[in-house]
Image (cartoon, rainbow, N blue to C red; front, side, top):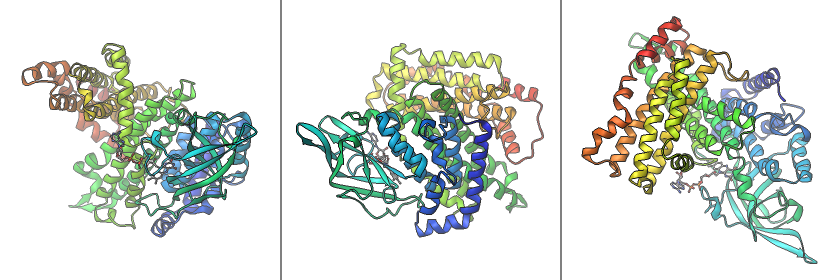
Length: 565
Ligand SMILES: Cc1cc2nc3c(=O)[nH]c(=O)nc-3n(C[C@H](O)[C@H](O)[C@H](O)COP(=O)(O)OP(=O)(O)OC[C@H]3O[C@@H](n4cnc5c(N)ncnc54)[C@H](O)[C@@H]3O)c2cc1C
């Protein structure tokens, strides 16, 4: 187990390494040259140097056996340095995942020990030209090679597309169709018939190597079939989605914060109309505070899900999807706003926010696009809605109301309004069979993510207030600031669920003109509107915290604001 002290040290070494070896000028130059700094990637994976990969390798194979929580924090830190380099390290992590979850003990020993001891780089070869979001339609084949009636090996034929580390990895996990279905194989660099294309000329993460792979009659021994049983490939991939998506969520978080951490100091120095931009509310609240709030909602969801995975609650794929969806969309939006915050300077290559914006864009695409996340979230929770006869989110709302009784200033009352409204919207969709419209199904996914995250953030605020937050948790904000952040997000979530819900239920023909007033009552629109009271005051407070000008308001005064909202 990694202690808090060891983790802090690892994070610090990583930060120091980034400052020394990848300062802004170097990053900008590598980005312009479209070059993957292979030496740096190898240094980071060298067990005698940084050895970052040791964190995700179990102790029995020579690693440090980091928890999900540890890996999230390291991923966030890597993304703050450079998302391309982070992607390269993540590719080894992803590439070894089918092994970690599905390999035989001998295979685990062989491959995981090599990652730990030799720092070999892996690539994860799933995507194909015609199989992206829908991996089931993959065309790469693995035909059995028989000898004396026994399977002794496989011949793999096909191509893979957009593979991170595709041109620089030592080992590749490749998904291919065997006679019994999709299966993972380990293929070594240089295997006969196995080639990679030149690196892709990408929009962002230009420090990562992304290349297409081609396999023509590439032979692998039977012991390269991960797990030794055909047809387990998609199950093995799905078994870790909750976990891997949390890591990409952390990338969104790290990149988004990295952009804002440039915009915030910039705005204190940039004088326009006689005063710094940081003193202009129309600037801070639109460009900075609202993005901080969404990022921290993403963080709350990541941390809670990581803790639950570490506690053995299973793979939590839907929670991983919610964390990824919220954090990567928030990261994108934060980086976009940071360009705006720097004005013309932000639009030039010289200022890093432009690069960060291009980099973070990938996080809503790889490891499952945002639309696929919406679908995953919606389908899973829809089943819960049906199973509980529409009570699932009313029950969750009641839990939030209980939390509010104990902690009246963390926005749990408003989170409860969002959750009740969500239950009403889903019930309306069920009654009108509106999920036959895919757009409605996906929008429900978005509302679920917001409503659930509002409750999670309120719980985080309460844990922080009680001093019970995970000791490794990011503690950038104290309990008072976190409570304000939570109230702001809960208001946004409630408005989104109720207003967008009403809009799309009516838009899909599920609520006719005469039914609208009753539906507005069911959604508790008036209470949700009243809950917006105090929003500007809370945003002012968060801005003051961010700019280090907190005239600390007494806790009671903040509670007052919450109670009146
Ligand atoms: C830089 C980079 C690195 C990558 N690294 C790797 C890697 O290491 N290994 C690997 O295996 N893959 C990798 N990928 C591939 C990545 O995971 C896929 O690009 C991603 O899963 C989306 O697949 P696609 O590109 O085929 O898009 P598509 O699946 O064709 O999607 C295109 C658009 O349609 C939407 N869409 C798709 N299906 C539906 C649907 N049913 N309903 C509604 N909308 C839908 C999507 O949300 C998206 O907006 C990488 C990609 C990039 C760009």
